[in-house]
Each structure stands twice: as C-alpha cells, then as structure tokens.
Length: 241
Image (tube, rainbow, N blue to C red; front, side, top):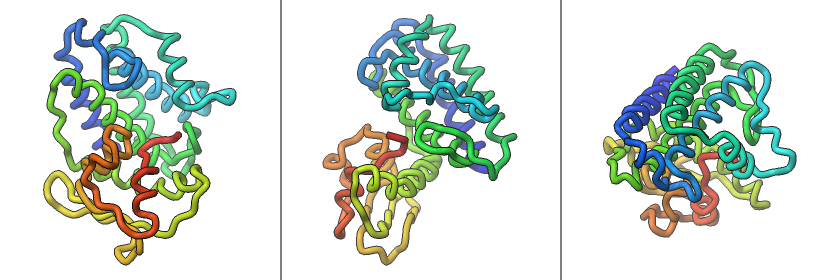
C-alpha cells in the first residue's frame, strides 16, 4: 500500500537531515515550544515504539489518567531525555520497526491509538503527518529547506476526514465541506463533495501547515467560504487533540 512506502520515504528524508546535525544543533531549540531538537526526536522514537506496542496488543503511552495527549507526551520526554547519539539510534530502530509492523498488521483490524482505535493505513497516515510536522520543527530553526512533496496528499486527506471529529470536539455541527487544494506539483486535489456549500481553496502545503498548527489560518492565504468554511479552517487538525 502506498501510504507505507510514503511514510518510510518521509522517515528516510528526516533521518538524512538529522545525520548531518552536530551535537550543538541537536541540543538547540526546535520549533516545538519547550523542546530541543533532541526532545522532538525522542518523542518520535517514543511514539514509533508505541505503534509497535499497540500492534502487539499494548500501548502504555496512551494510558493518560485524565491528562491530555500533549501532557502525556511532554511527561514521557522529560522522563527519558538522553544524549543525542542515543536518541538518534533509538529513533532509527523504532521508526523501522513501526513501518514494518504496520505493513504486516491485519489491514482490517483497529489498533489502539491516542484518540481512537485506527486501522494500520490510517495509523500510518497519522505517523506521516507527525513526522512531517516535526520535520518542520527541526529544519525551520536550522534554516534547512524541507520542500513539500506529493506525500502531503495523505496529510490533506487526514485533515479533511477528521473535520467532523474536530467540529464535534468543539461542540459544533457542520455540513459537508469541499477542500480544493493545489499540490506541490501543481495538480488539484479534491476532498469532499464538489457541490458542498462550504469550501476551503488554496495550497495543499498551507492547508497541511494549518492542520499541524505550524501556520495561522489568517496567514495561510487559504480561501474559506460558505456557512462552515471559516470554522473548518480554524478547527482543522492533522492529529488527535
């Protein structure tokens, strides 16, 4: 399935970037508030390990005891901080085990994850979205280019498909929403019914950045219209919350 190959490709791109960083860069602030780059990679290692644990029937990371997903993740990072070389090795092993596990998993079974049980393909899509977003957190402060690729197609699908959850989580209702996005190669990606009363139109890269909370809706140049368009743009997320 294409999503597994694309997740592996995104991981390989990030690994190549990290391999070029020295210890000073690893210990410098990332774009994720309160986390150095080494903390971001540790979080990715922990969550990739959580994928494998979930596929094997356990996922202690998401036993939140009433805490938010962000609080659980931050606590896990604080408890397991380590040297850059050790964190890098841990993530390299974890990310390969995660992709291999997802490829081999029962495609029709739902496995426990942060907000709800997910099938392997959807779980792989959330992992792609997270690795890409944290790739921005790593490369941005370092002035490293991270060009958009057509792998964003999966992340845009995720953002659109979770809009009903986002509205429900906010205690709101919405009708169908059409997202007409321009991909990095210039082609048009369409999500939702073309005749929907509400729509979001613009760059897929901007849409995905808004969904990752790496770009403010007001700065995205995305055009939202219809009764639910603006609300959808502000509620858009590529992850559980």
